[in-house]
Amino acid sequence: MAREQALQTLETWHDLLEKREFDRLRPLAAETVVFRSPAFFTPYPGVEPLVHIIATVNTIFEDFAYHREFWSEGHEAVVLEFSARVGDKKLKGIDIISFDDAGRIKEFEVMIRPANAAAAVGEAMAAKAGPRLKELLSKPA
Image (tube, rainbow, N blue to C red):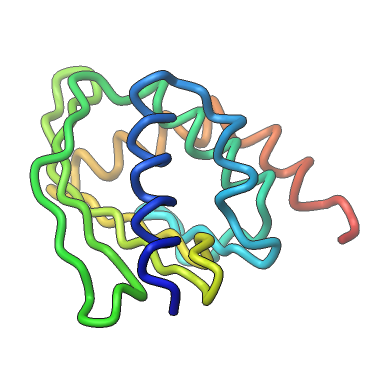
């Protein structure tokens, strides 16, 4: 695992989030990237679904902020703790980002609490991202 590449990917991740330049996520993700949602059991494979989900959730979250980060020993993964709000629901969560040998994102998993906030995120995402996500996932690879 290339530690420096993973650190650079994370630095770019923070920058693109701050600037809301979600197209910059594409080259950071491995072609086989998988997104794991806090609302649905089924994972979402592929770069385009990842970009669409991240861009959409950033229109739903208010007052989003990262607070802490924890790296695995070999820098194969990082856990980022965050807080946000969806309407009147305050939430806490973590992003678990795993990296491949080139430092690209190979898996992105989100966990959110409390359950009512996770449900609010799921409902908002289904409404805003659902139709386009279905289209992206139905395209042959």
